[in-house]
Image 1 (tube, rainbow, N blue to C red):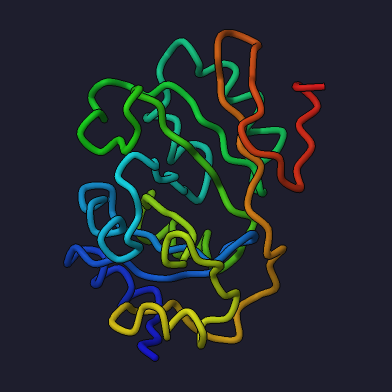
Image 2: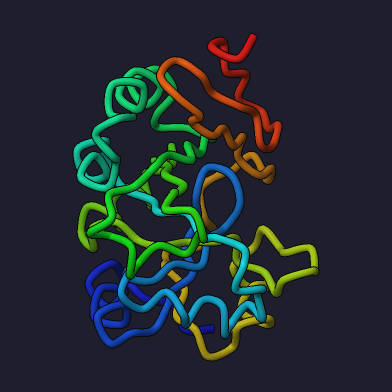
Length: 193
């Protein structure tokens, strides 16, 4: 298993390769935004399925949010982050080349995980997905994930901190004050009920 610390993880990411790291929900595979195609290759993931941009704090992600949605974004983000909520929001056109959706939207999240946040503080936002081969249930343990991705670096130390082992709740912004549930998870979003 290729365990690395945060400093080595940053070098790996800058070289264009993804790394595996723990979050508060499922383990993640992540890369710097300009190298997003690499995650699709390693996961054997359909290119029509978007990735999630994770950051360590709201101000890391606010520059990706379209002006029309900033007020709602800030309200929801300050209520539920860090945590197991992914917010799909319109993005600025200047980020179109790094977007992995077809509609100029971007899923954003700040995980409630010390290891993930420490990594993201060092690297800046990372495009992410769950650390599994698409179509297969992934493992929660670094040792087992290493079997699926033997060439990838894994953030240590292990064992990782405890996680929920459940995917995040996903909500999508439609218009001012109007959100839609995409995927139910453990976070109950009051603004939808």
